[in-house]
Image (cartoon, rainbow, N blue to C red; front, side, top):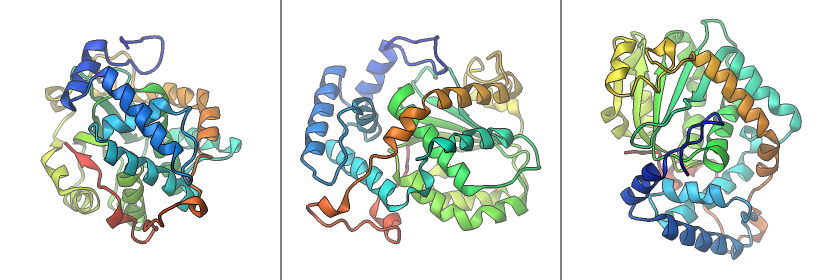
Length: 309
């Protein structure tokens, strides 16, 4: 479990992993046993797909659900139910590797290679220029694929820290995305057991108040307590170790965010075969023993909210 430098993401050390487990009152041995219990539960649910080859993903879900077996069961069921309810946001064709390539042409959306001392992962998100074609389906496909690959294959982390640089955002672009915000929030809230530690906003436009109100309504009011708006890039270093930050964001990591996006894109493409296989895993509602109340209409109220902690 020690840090590995031969891959894009540096993983937590054994000590850091032990600290992550201690915070949720578990150990490596106990969590492995709990994962086996969860897989046994999945096998007894005739509507659920076979997850025997997804032990690492189940483990990540258990960590994200703070070691609660019942919450993990609910989240796994919701996760694969959502894939069946609305497959348009999940890549299923080998021709769709163009989604990550297309998005990377105008946007950086990538985890940073080094993990924080606390075991948190930093994700950076910014547009490359003012000129781009907004495609909500491509954006959501890549966003969900990024999270899935991290949780299922490549990463171990406690919480997420997001850096959102709004330099090239405009009010017209925000208004253009408003019809999709509700649907985006449903998927981001309910597809994965994410724990957001902090959200840092750079180059805030004068309409930032409207943007924050949307975040509070669609995600969690607590987000305002963990949201920081910085006047300049240097303020980031008060919260995030400079060795983690790319050089164009005041850090000492020897690459730019654009270079890191290119590397992350290649990492995703290397795992694209797994994406195609895994996205075929969905619930079979005809075999569900107890009728599900989950629909696209009531999903917002039925699923758990994104955790900000």
